[in-house]
Amino acid sequence: MNLSKLAQRAGTETAFEVLAKAKELERQGKKIIHFEIGEPDFNTPENVKKAGVNAINENYTHYSPTQGIPGLRETVANYISKTREIKVSPDEVMITPGGKDVIFSTALAILNEGDEAIYPNPGYPIYESAIRLAGAKPVPMPLLEENDFAFDREQFKKLVTPKTKLIIINSPGNPTGGILSLQDLEIIAEVAIKNDIVVLSDEIYSRILYDGEFHSLASLPGMKDRTVILDGFSKTYAMTGWRLGYAVANNEIIDGLKKIAVNSFSCVAAFVQLAGIEALNGPQDEPERMRKEYEARRNLIVSGLNEIPGISVKVPKGAFYVFPNIKKTGNKSKEVAEYLLNEAGVATLSGTSFGEYGEGYIRFSYATSQENIKLGLEKVKEAFPKLMG
Image (cartoon, rainbow, N blue to C red; front, side):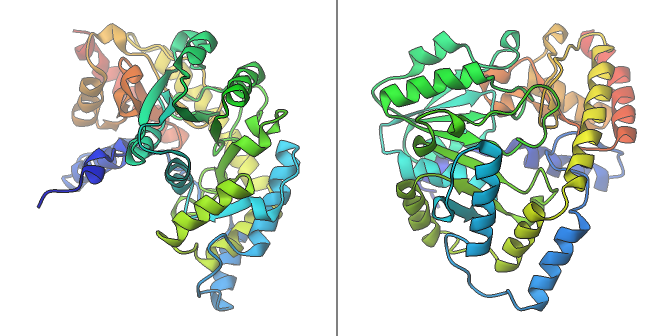
């Protein structure tokens, strides 16, 4: 059987492939320290789990509206209105099965064959994949270490052409932990308004910030109606398996997302949405406790990696990833990642899993315990001299 050209254009998320390899090594009896998957090691807060269980017991187990139940859409609208300082109505909210659907559906709703879309590179691999699936041309926006993994403003402007219909940004970002400054966002807003471009702003890590201040592009003058905000519950509330995210956009874009949703997932489970209401409206001490622990882990892994000859790493300002430079080894990123997995029992991701500008780097997710981080650092330190050969 020959798969369709569309299916052949689809990319992948390497984290799950490496996780499968690591699990197989564990099955064979090898001890593996997991830094590959971007998943909180915390459990979902008890109040949120209880709300989900109660919803099931109250028979919230049937179809729900495609756009999302009114209660959650209203809760999200209030949350975004408060945190982004813009006025959002429930009609401008679309509930989705995780944030990934927002990327895919926005690409399908905005892009036509032959259009161009600018996306961050290194960046979350689904951005490029979604652009290709929509039949458009992906245009990488390099995020360079010398710019603290922000973009070069003048270079960015040169990427824009009459065919550019979508810009994707992610701050705080995966895989670098870098953030876009207010000045960066002002440049993006200026370009988007001048050229009538929609911007997908992936803000899934907005609550996991350690240094600086979070700014949303949608908050800038003239940008609310041309920005699609992507946010969700997976990272902030350790709800990855619940599959609950949302888009905030103007009514025309939301209508497009709804049409795609009707043809794909129909609706998000009602009991999951009830849990989402509790997550946003309930106590916020658990998310803050997680954030503080991530910050302690960040400090631990950054200092530890920088002590290893052949590795240098910038201090990430948000998310829960570090993106160390390993160019001094003289090896390709994929070779280093495979060596660490097979020889040291340390699962990381090659920087090229996030695009060609990730060559020379590997990604560690520090969404794991300080004990595991210390053990992993020891193993990397022991293994690296052979790479430096």
